Amino acid sequence: MSRGSDTKADTADKPSAGTGDARAGTGRVPAGATDGGPTGTSGGVPMRTTHADPTRTTDAVPTGTTDPVGAMFAADTASRGLGMELLASGDGAARVRMTVTAAMLNGHGTAHGGFLFTLADTAFACACNSRGPVTVAAGADVDFVAPAFEGDVLVAVARERVRYGRSGLYDVRIERDGHVVVEFRGRSRALRADTEGADKDGADREGVETRA
Image (cartoon, rainbow, N blue to C red; front, side, top):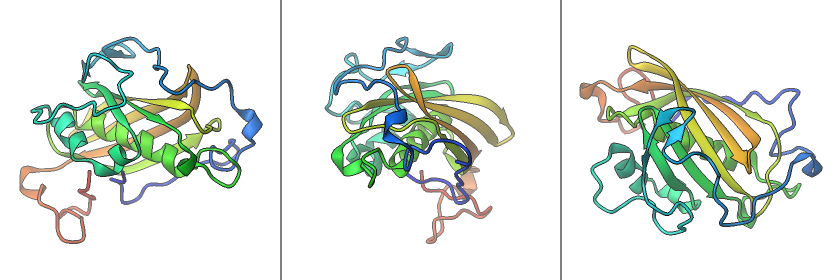
């Protein structure tokens, strides 16, 4: 889901998941496998697990949840429509899982970079909104490290690096069975209470996109 109005991709001199050699990837994870990461943490950052069984393929967010990230994700038809599952979130961190489907492949038979960016962007959104204030993307950079293939189970782990004023920096790593596929850095902006209502063009009074 797109939340940045000036999102850019820097893929120079790096194998692109959208156009790279399909032979460059490492082993793939069978569909339904878990990410193998520590439960409830992301690099030492505690997170709320959204359900007891992370291998579930049904909705991971309980209906009527009061958790700000859970409520946001429950309303996110774009990410949920791609089969993403919110595994955990809290204290500036989040984990989101997605399985690559045939509909996500490009002409080289690998996962289109746009879908990989969307997975990272969704994890970024969950992490930067985990403390409650409505927060949106001001921009992002992405590096496609290795290609992904149909059936791969990808897990995006987002982690807050720093917050300053209403701005923040977040790093997201997408992995497949412990191997890095994408590195992503997002720049966030928390909205003031008087600017949470978006104009018809989707921008607040400071020009930051408000669609989360």
